[in-house]
Image (cartoon, rainbow, N blue to C red; front, side, top):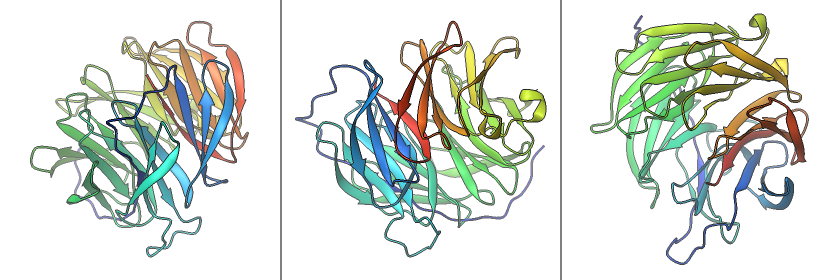
Length: 330
């Protein structure tokens, strides 16, 4: 079903640095955004230990790496949302030196964003203003502002880079943006309070979490038809983050209030496991080889590492206060 929407705005902070001389980390690393301590924890995945902390200007939430793993981008905002706050923006961090090199100001109270596969553009949700903003990832130059739903939050870009999706919490909607001309071409109604969206690796499906409904919606990316609604933890979950395995066979959902990681078979929509991971898991990420799943447990102040085959926790990593999101190098 389609619906015409009202709107809200937000902002992001980004950290960048020249990449010509930067060495990619010798082995996989994880970066965890921490709301409470206004920083990023740097985790050595080989030892499952936090080895460094990168301070930021504000509350850290959305977090992503550039395609070459050389630059880390983090959405930051004020603890008490204020449009004029200097904490609002996308911080750009040089992965090699672990230093913030720039801040891109794109609106108030930014929460989530996504990069295009070529690393050229960043699309952010502006929660307070009902808009999505496109900026040049190299310069921070404003490219477009698009009206989406009320209190936009989650952002996802298709694997081919042609489509951008933005969830909106209050209008219970999913806006579809065509990248070539930066136009909103569709608005879909989904379950109550959609938080995050993720494409399957082949771009054929979209997975959207709904926090109040306690569900995961599976949507055909081409026709925008609803394929399946999956109830999580008997409806008791308050899902936030969602990630898909590199081969597309599994979908992983961070359950929020339920404290679980739900593992779903993408072919049959069957729930394979519900793994207790910690208090309020918000963010979730999958390793490049698909063997490990990581959850940012917001009220446990740690990250749980789950074996993708056994669905057992193999490690817990202490990070900052109120960890929100995770980005993994390849």
